[in-house]
Length: 281
Image 1 (cartoon, rainbow, N blue to C red):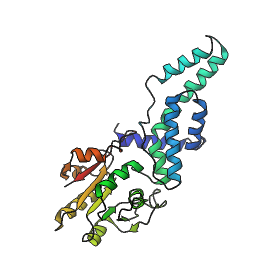
Image 2 (image 1 turned 90 degrees about the horizontal axis):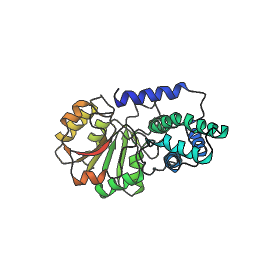
Image 3 (image 1 turned 120 degrees about the vertical axis):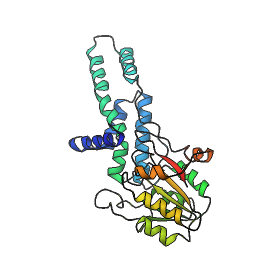
Image 4 (image 1 turned 180 degrees about the vertical axis):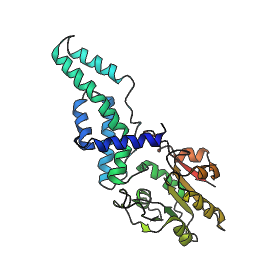
């Protein structure tokens, strides 16, 4: 099963279980259940803090891989044995509580991106350190963000006094949360029209998470290449994965060097998606 199908399956499963507490409430409950397990609290606390910042229309910090240690069940067994003698009913109850909640915890950790999509319309995880790196790269040049969604990237860059125009067609507003939680001013205009409108005023274009399988990204790449002036093209997505069309990844001339490595030092995978920032010719 590929990553996109697995993510969609997790999303469907989460919607079916309507009687469960809300996602963040469940995580706060895990904080209590696993209060004596720092490796679990570390992961849960990262999610809760990221949610707190995003809820306040602020960019979150980087995330660690949201995956339980392979030996976590052994650690739990050792912990219970250190507190209770073998056969003690209290120890059995504690073991059952801790071990029975592990699959639920594992599922919720792996579903954080799904939660961000459904709750906030945040598809790519955009952290404050990542935006700071992009800000240093664009270095006060004027930019255009196409397919900006709720404006996480433009919001972050504007907070750092960068001059950027945020645009989005808002075609998805009736299907999901994109466009319903704007963090900054986003002009309603499609990508190709935005490039045509601002092509003489900008130095770079940012495109983040173009929808997978839709070849609008190819049209955008061709339009940029046909222009009579050089414009940097910054693309954030998962190559041959959850974003963009296959044709785009075949056509795109990706620059991968020390500079792109530096731009990605704060954009690391935390789940099944391995998206990156690319500089595209």
